Length: 256
Image 1: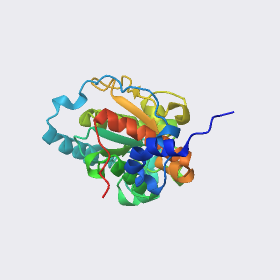
Image 2: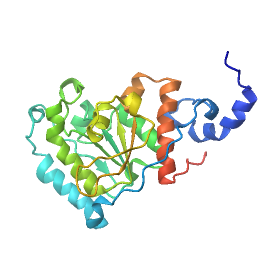
Image 3: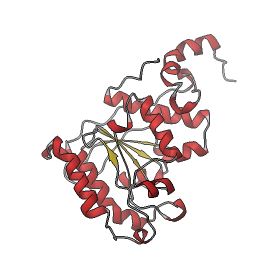
């Protein structure tokens, strides 16, 4: 029989975490004592992939890639049904990059990543890390919306993957957060599901010179979180983000 925890003890141990996180995702969180973080360490610092590109030129380099290559891309059949491509946006010198699977209906209309309900939730997650959307970089594995928002097919992923790899190479982040199965399995070259992968530091494999070894934190996609909006899923995602905050030496925002 499991020994019952003294509620006063749990509240005391949880106070700091609850104060830091009560605004995240608009819900309550499990106390720290009931939601222990995995005892893991971020990988060693990886080579700086974009070191050869001056910081001032990274945004221009990304914009030229978007305009000259991605907007007119016809590498796969998704080009036939798109309204427009969705390249990515944010700080070209960001230490943190979030990678999802592909654009949805709202993203296809606007040309911007994560602007629908899942995007609103992602912004809350970023804010809880004491960052803004403008301070990180947000993109997807594929740049065109799949029909009916289905998961991208292997050939579609392979057609778009060179764009994503070049984005990461230019930005040279310290940490990549992969959200959901397609992003995680693509960037980590694995078939293991996100439920087993999340919450543990991984390293980017050899995609290009300078990229190998960048720290990767897999977590659930915000769309999955919306469909499974429970204490358990919210606490797991927040635990994953806390590990990223520790790696980037970020402190939670102060309560107003």
